[in-house]
Image (cartoon, rainbow over all chains, first blue to last red; front, side, top):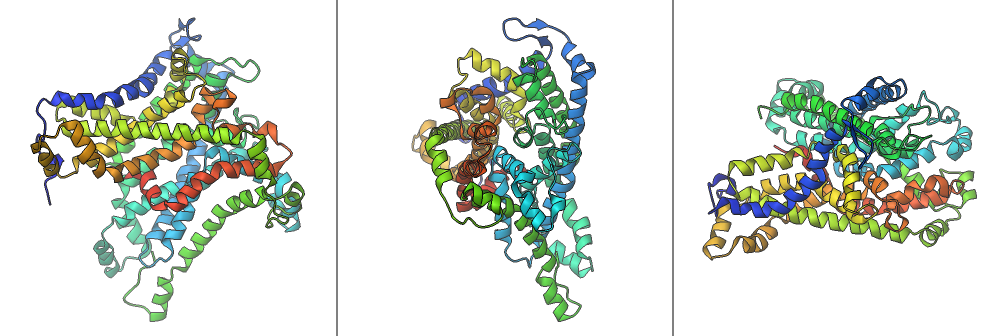
Length: 308
Length: 286
């Protein structure tokens, strides 16, 4: 094999700093429109008011968020809902994804390509579109009479109008949509498991479960960790699915309010009766998310991604 | 899963090789996935009466009126064009800036370069939504509110970390002799970028492009916040208006949803392999 650029010290590199000019456009754009606003949002969480009339307020926004009788109830409710939403994705989506991937990578499985293609279709649809679609399909007005005629009347319920079922249904629709991502990643991971290892296990008399539990799973732990992180990060920012299926404030009675939708209501749109956004509280919510992500992501990375 | 065993009856082994439970599982899930898509498309092709009489049946009579109405009455083409402009310009900027930066980072060996590389890479883990509050004010300050540029700039910033990551790694993996030959010929860095690097990194550019294409086309958050002016709206903002617009005329709603979802689904079905490598690129980082 030819030596790659990586292996060489300085291939065409007199005056290394000259390369900086190649970085500059990306660096500027990334800093101005991503890195700086992210960090500065943390600073904004210590202020109240909007541009021009901004007043330093210390931790007042956080106090409001965590202890105010109205705001904190909304926050802790959204916090709890987001964990339920996350639990659905970890336990249903990612377990299904693993199951699909094991089935699809079985050596003798036929039609793998077609199944993979189908499983992945929902991932390409906008959440706004699929969410709205399910909102209509689940409405008893849509198929109620036909389902009753088929003897399936237990399916005719106001799924999204009942606070007892709304969050579960929203979560399951999201699982329906995204299960293709873990499936594909696990397939890629399992295809990397050496064939002779599995053959050896087979000869030693391992059954399918043992081969999975003691050979495949440990070998694809890095992928499992990646999926857990992706799921965590996207769930704690989920907004579209709630916006499309139930509404921006997470009805009925805030049963489907997630941290993402709460952030939208307080920080961007303004709460319903008043309609004036509170950027400070919004920034406090996003900072809280930021901290939670760091607390969740870093240990997972360390536990699953090897020594680096 | 059901691996062929050396012992056991021949018939049992054959049965195992057929993976019946596996196929059953896959068929059930395929049904679960395709049923809503089927209902979406067939009901967009029905009349109102047709839909209510049997939402599960094939359309009879089949009608294209819903699609016609959406395209003629609404400003669907305008929304569609806006979405297209946003995707094309964002992807163009991501690929251009990302490949330049990747080229620089792959060659520049110093502490500063390593630091900058790391600075880009953390962006992959952090959702840009966290920056929303500050971005809103920044856009107002720059006079970009209600302009497509606002979302184009944000999408470009959002796409750069993965672009820099994939392209830097890819360029580092290119054979070093290539550069040396070009360099000996007296070619300058800019020329090497254009004539040697760009043609070689096409597969990586495709991966980065697809990785960013779907999230940009499907993003609701930033248009919802930055764009309120009718003539700048994207396709998904048209979908958000549905609640008020055709509340009683569901087939028209299905038609609009179909029109919004179809372009990406067709693109996906026509190049599904690249999609899967592209969209799962984030996971296979070393």
